[in-house]
Picture 1 (cartoon, rainbow, N blue to C red):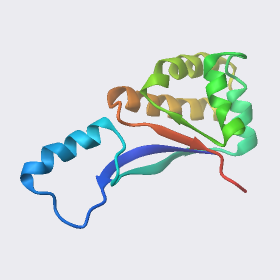
Picture 2 (picture 1 turned 90 degrees about the vertical axis):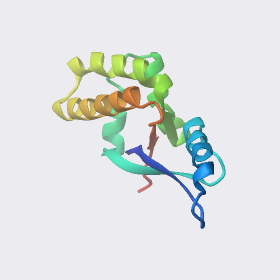
Picture 3 (picture 1 turned 60 degrees about the vertical axis):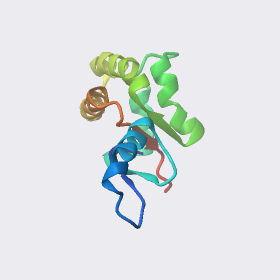
Length: 132
């Protein structure tokens, strides 16, 4: 399992952008993914597959947070963005009481990443299963 966090965006271009067009470039970066905009993701948290499954099992059964995190086994990957922050932060904070020390460490790391997203909502996480 790997949680990758957006670290930066850049425009794939051969020529320098004229100064008068720079604001358009910034606007394009701010509103989302467009042709030529490349997201750079960096691994921020990794854990073994079986331990990931045990970790998310500490979330309340049937909760929206657990369903979200169960998307990785179901679909192979999920995206966590600003829309998921309150729900996941509350769920992982609540689950800490029933977690092992390793799971608590992962929860603390995830909560920190969720805080980063809350502070800068252009940041997101890509969570995917690493194939053995």
